[in-house]
Image (tube, rainbow, N blue to C red; front, side):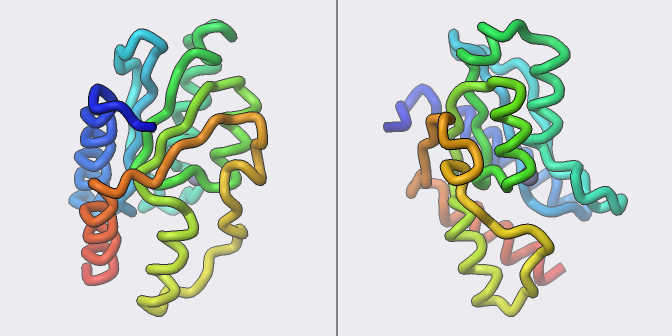
Length: 158
Ligand SMILES: [Zn+2]
């Protein structure tokens, strides 16, 4: 269960996704939070320049590898507007990060994009548990799903 105290981190993910959208990028945002609830780092999608590996979850995994001990990484949580893609799930697992809490699942997002006629990307949208079975994952978070869905709709209209 996602606790009320965690919702502020998820709302920050939505703000970061909005910021990404407003700068012409895809609406994804993520926050890395220590075991004591302190936000340590955050990022948003930065693929508009052409490098499609610039996902926030990937950046946070590399930040964690550079700045945190293995124990700190294991106790940390990554909050994110959308479930990690396979690349980011692998990076998360390889650096030994802890729990993931996402607002919308890859299955939800894939379904919406198909419904809106968006062609599939080059990577299968496997759920985190299939890529990184040892990582604890929670989501979707129903109270915020509608907001994130609307950001993706806005992205397609722009
Ligand atoms: Zn990713």
